[in-house]
Picture 1 (tube, rainbow, N blue to C red):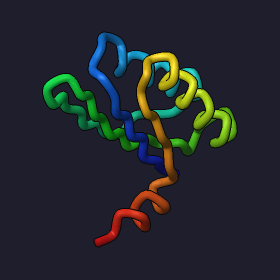
Picture 2: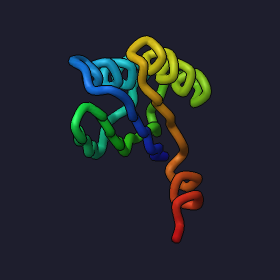
Picture 3: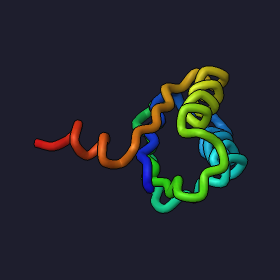
Picture 4: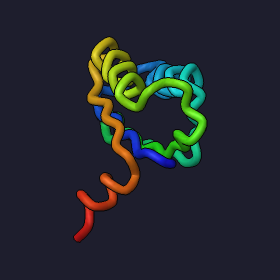
Length: 89
């Protein structure tokens, strides 16, 4: 099982570390990551493996949202199949 995480907000130190630590704490493996900063806007998309996750999906989503709020970021996670369905052209 895989999921897609999106992160958007003002660039600051520690964004990748904060998200990565939250994922590691839940036993989620990062498969791919793409990030860029456009002027002072940080954007990141992560593809993660949630097969061996040791918390419910909803709990992980809440934890990611909490870290996002603490860093003034928008952080969302979606199952890969839902993400792909929503973004078909």
